[in-house]
Amino acid sequence: MKEKIEGLKKQLNDLKIESEEQLESFRLKYLSKKGLIQSLFEDFKNVPKEDKPDVGQMVNVLKNQAYEMYNSLKSEIARKEDKGTNDIDLTRPVEFSHFGARHPISLVRKEIIDIFNRIGFIISEGPEVEDDFHVFTALNFPEEHPARDMQDTFFIEKDPDIALRTHTSSVQARVMESQNPPIRTISPGRVFRNEAISARAHCIFHQVEGLYVDKNVSFSDLKQTLLYFAKEMFGEETKIRLRPSYFPFTEPSAEMDVSCNICGGKGCNVCKYTGWLEILGCGMVDPNVLKNCGIDSEKYTGFAFGMGVERIAMLKYQVKDLRLFFENDKRFLDQFRGAY
Image 1 (cartoon, one colour):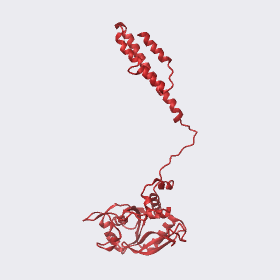
Image 2 (cartoon, helix red, strand yellow):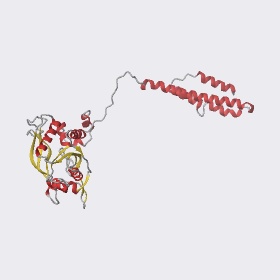
Image 3 (cartoon, one colour):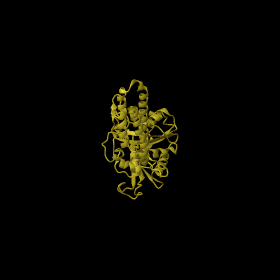
Image 4 (spheres, one colour):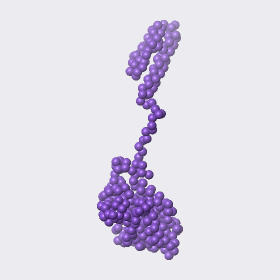
């Protein structure tokens, strides 16, 4: 028995194992349940009683040696095989990973906010699920007034009416309720209207609305503010024009156009050969709105404006289908990689 153990020990010392296949053969031959070392434990019962202490110790030493040898060879072979594929060459140029692109709506929204921040406008936010008072009544939409039909609203509850806000003007109403003039704020956010989805319309879109209330605020202040915005957004050569319009919460009211940044005002299919593109609505805050929100309309005046972020993004990036902003198509979004 002792000679057999010594013979196996010599075999282990003479082994040359350089691959996983050879290592697996070693394991099966010596360490498996039917291996040579396990057979020594089965033969141990035939060892004379007086020799069992010495023989038992020799078998355990051999077993431990075999397992240590197996684990050492396994680690060494793994290191050799990894070296050819995962070795790091510190002299190689860095391979930069491709990061995701910011969404064009996020880019334009940030740019609009930055422009108005530079002239003192702060950001105000409010709930997307609103009550009737802040969406309509405070903004001069009386009960049963036909102006309420201008917007198809998603109503959630009745008595009292709770709806998804149709404009971020509801945030302006909350600001005027809680703050004393002077007020100079913009309200970016999502709005919802029950409209058919098409290349030019969607039931969800984004707005940025602005409000300035103080003593002696005039229409001239509104015009100069919007001219500054247009030049910052579309370029120094941009011109604006204001056309009379109607909104329940402003009087007088106007639609603002900018000179087409694609044709330079000469006329093209995008501006329908007029040289102008409509981008926002604006006007002087109606005195009734100021009163509804607890502001003295005899002492203060103000102006307000509102624009669709998707509309600005379509003009800025010459996107012809509004639905592209919502489809999450990677091919479309990758075009804005690096635009910060």
